[in-house]
Image 1 (cartoon, rainbow, N blue to C red):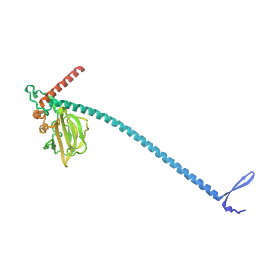
Image 2 (image 1 turned 45 degrees about the horizontal axis):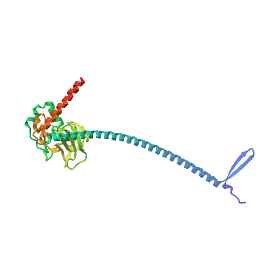
Image 3 (image 1 turned 90 degrees about the horizontal axis):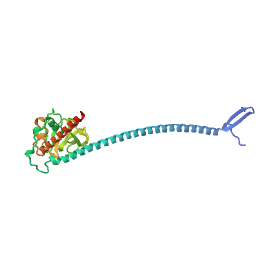
Length: 298
């Protein structure tokens, strides 16, 4: 029989009523068992921490998913509201544009020369103070910035420029609807705003540094629509008034007020007689509605 070195054995002794029993395990097997047990423990620890890490990552992903869904729902609702507002504003703008087209046949002198009918001339003296103020409210007039700024205008072939200090507040010169805005620099006007007014008038404000209104929005006379900027590295504001797309005597319109109400009436591009009759009829209808409404509320 082959001799086995006792040093290579691991002896286990068990003492009971039957005596002493001994079991011997080879030391190599002992090492294998110990290494296997240590390996299993290490694997178990690694698996435990891996599962814990993955569970934490999964929780973070779920939280991120929930936040993303909430933001998406919020943005979607805002887009829906904005879309509705744009549709409403666009419908209002379309109605006004249609009214402008309807009025063109009444007050335009572009397609035909109208012989003056002295028997039907409108007597401007019949306009009351309130009617004149209302007319100055809905038709562009005066300067688009604070009158205290003493700025020398430079009249161009079309429009006028002022050397306004940078970021000077710019105001709408009459009630109207924002027809167009450009918040990126264009070649000629830079950032600009175009407003549609009553009876076919429009006003344009160019070389702005900032725009404070949006397309389709309704503005009132004196409301801030933006701030002046630069043109060719010079502080500047461009301003223009058009009637049915044609140039008017801008020099008269920027000084038009209650004290010199008739200063613009000689502008040949505008049939002021027809316009004043139309305006007078509208004012009478408006006053009639207000009178009837007041009687109904009594």
